[in-house]
Image (cartoon, rainbow, N blue to C red; front, top):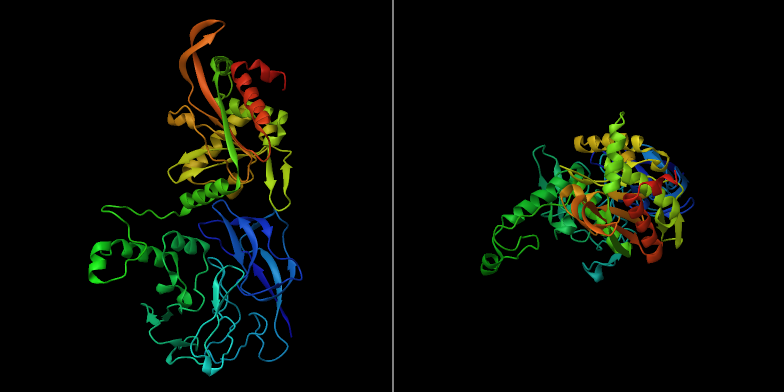
Amino acid sequence: MAQVLEFRLPDLGEGLTEAEIVRWLVAVGDVVTVDQPVVEVETAKAMVEVPCPYGGVVTARFGEEGAELPVGAPLLTVAVGAGDDAGSAGGPAGSSDAVGASGEPSGESSGNVLVGYGTGAPAARRRRIRPAHQGAGVAARPDSGGRAVASAQAAASPGTRDGATGVAAPQGTTSRIDDGRPRTRPEADGPVPVISPLVRRLARENGLDLRQLTGSGPDGLIMRADVESALRAAESAPEPAAAAASGAAVPRTVAQGAGAERIPLRGVRGAVADKLSRSRQEIPDATCWVDADATELMAARAAMNGAGGPKISVLALLARICTAALARYPELNSTVDLQARAIVRLPEVHLGFAAQTERGLVVPVVKDAHDRSAESLTEEFARLTQAAREGTLTPADLTGGTFTLNNYGVFGVDGSTPIINHPEAAMLGVGRIVPKPWVHRGELAVRQVVQLSLTFDHRVCDGGTAGGFLRYVADCVEQPSVLLRTL
């Protein structure tokens, strides 16, 4: 009898409590295999493909693309099972519960989900028995996740038996840790017991072969600590010349040069690296810039703050100018749907702003910025900046942006060519406002000058639109009365 199993959104790690469904990779009625990615989700830290630990037929999906789900909420249900006693309740169709020629049972599920999501013991991949005369050769085929899944040889080689699982393990692959439970090193031709995409990425970026590690987690699961420990050990290994002289293989993870320091890309820094890399890979960006006389804008701000009431920040005035400019040039408040090959113009302006914190760069988002006054924008900027410094920003505070305002002038620089915050289409950069010689009304004078730059996705508009947007922003900075006509 077929059994319907429910797969819930697993704990994605790093203290995250929810994720947004970006793209479903399967539809109702599709047949999925164990560990096949079924949905792409985005958190405040990264975008992750979530693998399903069951094999069978998808009977239901929960949540539309763009919806946010809390950890533990149902993602989909899968009908699993086989038509005879040898069928597995949770593995791929045709796998066997009985121990076969490879000496491994299939179990109820793969265990290959994300952090904190408990399933049954890891199941072996379906093995294909070969005639004895073919020897111990191994054939590999790629699975849906791009990994190599190896088929077993005809007869299992002599080995020890894991008393906890009853699985025959090859000789030399079993180790023990302090709790006395056996831990198995991954076979050279079998799946690697890793469930976290962060662990895989960390190993891949540092050239580390996960098959050489013995996992310290449940049932030999390779954890992030195992990878970091291996990297530290590699850093303290002999230098390449000494290793070559001794005939030892030189690991690819050994730092070249004396005193080299290796800093893993993880946490906020790793998430930023991934997002910026994706932006560079996908978005054909271009940048234009202009110098503007901000003397009148600073005078207007001083007059507002001198009239009493809450103080208005320069960033809030620039944000108000941005929203007015986006109303005139909506092409820049959009995103590109690669699958549909379409530009999607967005009706609301959710304004992100770059904030540097001790934990790295974050981009909090002011929701519905187009409906806010300068006073409201000031309050929201202050709230989000404080939360960013304290590390209390929620996923909702960090997602959903449609346009970013980057005030790099706080670092004492005049200009920059920033990277667009994917999947947005543009970013306005603002340099420092400093006294400079300027021709004003036909005479040379000292004025408060700022450099403005616009980096934009060339797929959503051409230079004429980008130039018009930037020129309108500069005109509003130089003459705030221009902005009053649109309020």
